[in-house]
Length: 420
Image (cartoon, rainbow, N blue to C red; front, side, top):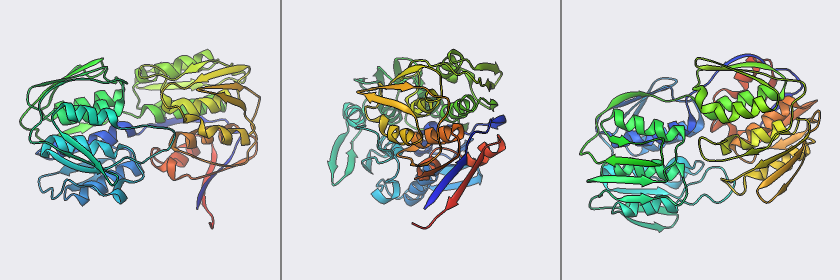
């Protein structure tokens, strides 16, 4: 078993380069199946979720070649199957994007129900509703989603919730639907826009990505092309929060500052200096972090994927903070581990009441999901003594060279192997 150990209390200083966005990459790699030419995807993060997806594509007979650590060529000309097995994608949720890509181009797909992090119900009923509106027949048998269609036809689709996954999945499939598709109440997240931009680069006709209504005019074919993925908003936010938690001075490079507005506003409210400069943000912490209230919302609101990390930060701020989760009802599973580190907080429904304190105390804790693991890293950096974090496999799903980047900022952090 692997653990990450942190000797806390060190002020982070320096600069860190942000990798490509995980949430965009896990949509764009499957979306490349829709192209009938070779796709070259640049700025891919070197993370486990990308490796899993690439392995799944290879098992379908798709040619995938990394020309360097962050550049992947995908050629689906020789695809042999439209069926993904459970073992190939059991540890990730974004495998459902293979449904939209395979259904759109080949009018058939068999993909397991999604796995990934467990922090509450995240059904794919909106995905299915969208595919059915386009003319597909969907059956779920033995844990597999089986989709078939003689043809796909454009439709008006209203999403009851602004689901990122459903928006992207329906958009990918609708590229090959005859006529025009409208997705209403569409998600606006940056990776929705990035996926639309990628598909448009291949010849799709998608308008309105980043707004409430996305309009897709079907095309007969997509060609190949080159595309570079946007920077990771959540990775950037994690380092910004870590800088604040340690009273540090960190410049986060190669980002889109506009994507960070909701977090930058909260860090400023807490007393930090947040300085934008081109494609970077510098966060200068303070010894007197002030409490604040945070409510997660769909973009451009405060992202749910930064909720656990923000909770760790609020645990070392002066005063009482309220953190409200509106997206995932069981996202608070990490709280019991923060309590082990000495945090003073309690959860009532979807609200965490956090009484900040001057410091936390290192101990042994366990990550329950990807962003919970990141929160424990932030807490460990701010804590006195040594923190040992188990279940670090979750962190490998979404953070590239996490320990290496933190070490370069002055953290005392190591990954160790221990007997089970």
